[in-house]
Length: 302
Image (cartoon, rainbow, N blue to C red; front, side):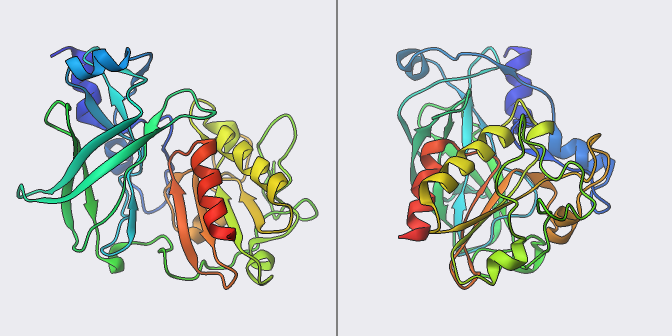
């Protein structure tokens, strides 16, 4: 087995797209376990080559406690070839999820997503009834798949789908609240800092809240992900209020911003989608493309 491929299927996580953040609750040992190693970004070949050779599955979602029983699970993954390269693949993958004891518990179909981003991913959505360790597998993979865990709700610190998103006074154009720059999107800050998250949640309008730092994950999806959200803001006009909070309080990325600490998350980027009463009805973690974001936003405001 080539060394690059072995490293890819062992580490599982593409760290340039799910950026962990060191916080008081995250030790250096845990940080290293989360980040794993770097992967080469290159083309994987065409569909016929994909079908002929086994491929590895690399997760594009955080390994932090995130998934809970009965809630919708979103498991974006990318594919890696025998040389350890991430890249393209078929329009859809079919597969299954199995419990760590080997029981097959769900069949899945994953469409390919890649509009506006360099490396595509496959969008897996499912629901699992019980907490535990699971493996995501696909037809034609190398037999390893991608491991993940479903946690009891009491073990998850970040806000849960189905619960109200806690309000917070995020930085605005008029009041940066100690965060400089208040938005790290370049060349100009994004327009999603007109109101605080607190004000948005009290408006009686659907709310979309993104946490991400475009300036410090340029090889990932924070910058394009935020740009996609700005496009949705322009498209929807007043059908939803959109708020962005940057991750760091300083341009050197040495101090976490208060909004991130309040949320209790240890990775980025994230989008929370809330109904008019402030309840989280959907979320996107780690990576999304323009097409998936538009679909989920339309579901929110329909």
